[in-house]
Image (cartoon, rainbow, N blue to C red; front, side, top):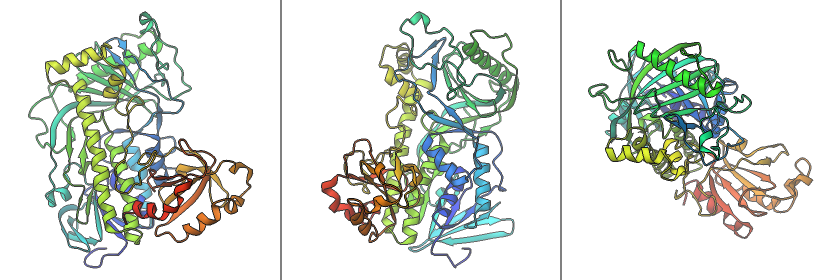
Length: 568
């Protein structure tokens, strides 16, 4: 791929963070070669970070890494919110399954790196600094400088995952507007033994006088993250406590803004601070107060020193809200922090980048394989920039609560948390990714790839399916390859093995399947929410419903598939 001889099925990936590593593996899973260029040395980045993923994104990275992430994720229940010394009412019942999963970003990067090193379709180029980008109608060239001097890579496509200070984005002169330094956070990783499930009941008792009574710890379910708003130990700010595997808690404090720190507004990075609220002695004191509060919530009493613990790491960083003007420029596509920076209350940066990758990988593979025209990739810009823009809006809304900038916003936060306004609004603003928030997962309704209908543009419901060879499984196990056609066929249970292939509509559908312009798998299920018998759902490789065809509309199947692959 170096020099002037690009492979027709190759992609250059700039940046080896979670998004870049996942992009290389997702493309490799589709048989697409890539070269991964990064200024680092091929090890997880220094410092400690944590990330929260929903079940769909966790399954995606598990699929990319094999068994390398076994035991790495901590299932989370609904985030509990506590203002001062009282719980904020929650209007949703505790879900039966975890809401999200917490894991160490370093462990995620390690698993992705190991999988990349094991893949014969990924070539790595470490310690290379990007210096420029050139492109024409058929290819793009990445200019870099490495240990051996200047290097060029040329390929049909370049995916820029090189972070908030993206050299690719700057080389293309893509604007990155937004709001710098909207918040200042202090993070600490603490090893401490506390009950993972603190205050397991999500609904407030009818008698307000009982609201603050401690509840019995329950270790059987998902762990409980806590958000403290204006607590006695941190007046005017918020503290987030998130449990991670191996008895580690990630604690995050909101700190007063300090002007003059991290003047490079495009960066979200660790800042060395001395002589202020983030010095080591104060960090240790902050940790003790939070742990005492968590210990008190779990046991009803707490010692003056709190539970025994080890401070593993602490660091401070400023947060920015920015959105690139374009996610696609010719043959270059931006993803991850190179494309957007969002307040962590509204979106986890790792999760948002993985969503970019999952949306982009199948479109690149379809284009390179000739299954779709190049204009399919323009929908990546529309779908993913729209999703990021909605997350930015949620971040701004959350900031009115977490970092009120005006007296009116401060009064609004106080009234809302006191219950003077809708409780659902309270939870949506303080936890935009929780069950009380509408649209916590991307919604691509309105995309030109979709055929309008019930549930189109939404993420699939994971239902049991029978595949062509008679194997039973789940719908999500069919994703990330080609298109999926899901037929709702009540009574499928009476057929054994693959005999269903010759029943009812199946022979005609299979005959049409063989003539499609893009690869597709036909699977059946006995029922699907909102779909009547013999309905056919067209599902994109990234798990979104592209068409909902009732029995009387099956004649437009080929048309809807052409639309889903960008050919209409």
